[in-house]
Image (tube, rainbow over all chains, first blue to last red; front, top):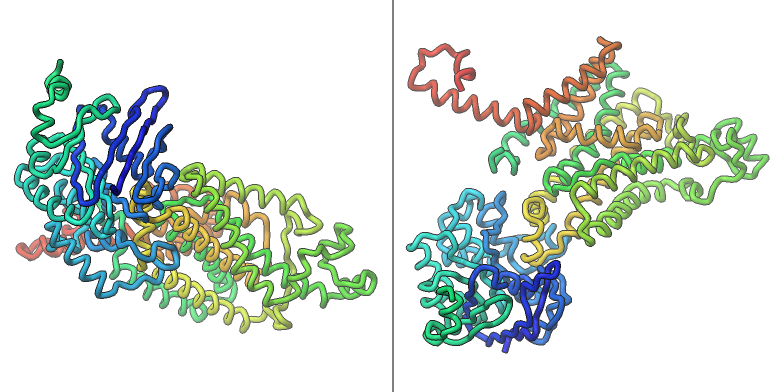
Length: 242
Length: 381
């Protein structure tokens, strides 16, 4: 087990966004987390990656407790986070965006005298091709289309080589064609690492998920394969309005 | 503002600006009289903090309204060294040194300070003084900035802290007259290691030393911006939260930029004290600090060379207005600032770049219709 979340809770001004949640993710697993708006899905990812401090509970990643760690330490530990709205460095080129995500020499002086070597060039090239941006290396991230920005952010995560990928709605705002390509991409990159994907699009979830967790009001409502989930009466009630 | 304008760096423009600057500065001693050359040297000293602000504010997104503090540190350290040398030479100094057993700067005598304070003593040594100039301001700046940025105090709040520190420093200097020379500052020194710094030849030498140091500063800053650290600074400016998830600690990078800007300001201050023969609280407080921001803004805060041009332009305007319109010169200077903000929000660098693009488009547009009058091309765009 690579990630083990137990009895996790956080409240904002008395509102319990996540309330006693438990979750276990195996190595190499691709887990989808679904649920209605406000179920606490994004908050869950925020707590895993260090953006939000939980009020209670524990998050164990490999042998480390993540709840007390600062964001960049969690990242250095091998957790990569993709945000819901594409978060790239718009004033930098695709190449530069990928390059600064390379997990070496993260100090000021190391970065000052950092020189691009063959290993890095190869890696940037292979990641760029993988995220369908091989031809756009020298374009500013700000000039890319919405879908391309989403891919670029996934590429930035790939540069970090994380053991655990956290993806928040990676196909939001994408065309059907882009969705298909993203599904292909995710299946390719999730091999050899664990991935948690938050998604609303059921067809997309069906394409990629090993196992699905349904969240509702800050708790886990159901967990299982896509078929199990779709037969589960509580899930039907929550989704189709009871 | 387009993405390109924000990122700003236009290689050709920077290069042209640099060459033009080099030509101008080398020509100064041969085309202007000694008084004007002295003025130019003084202006150039203020270009150092402006270049630092391009790095810190333009690229790092951290606005310091207190660079006068670091300029002041450099100038006071240098002035203390020069003053101790002067005190050892003058008659009052030697008479008093016989009496007290050590030579005291004149203003201490006037203020009945009888013993040289312990923190003045190391400034007898030139190596110590030079080390203090390049180490103390950046170290102080780094610690201050890191403490704030680590706690995620930034933006306007940090700017106000820098402003307050500069104000406090000038108040303390004025209040502690016996130790600092008070509102008069530290002045009246004539030699540096026994060399007469008021002679024409030495002044010219110092002028060129300043020019060389300034170019070195521009190139050093260019090196930082071209490195991965430079790109991380831009990334932090635009999306600080995201940078943490790329595995970087933004606090160290911003504190580094702040320290680098402090170092440049301090060097500028030291060169100023050496050439102007003055370290004064009026160059430490809020007004000079904000003026330094104006130099960078007028030049275009994303252009290192632009910052030097901006400094020279503002000072040239100051000098011109005050000499020709002594009654209203401050209003004219104010009008110039308003004009820059309104019509050149990206400063000189952005303005010349737009002109160049417009001219290029104008030429392209004019090609199919060569009969069009040449003067109309730019207006039409």
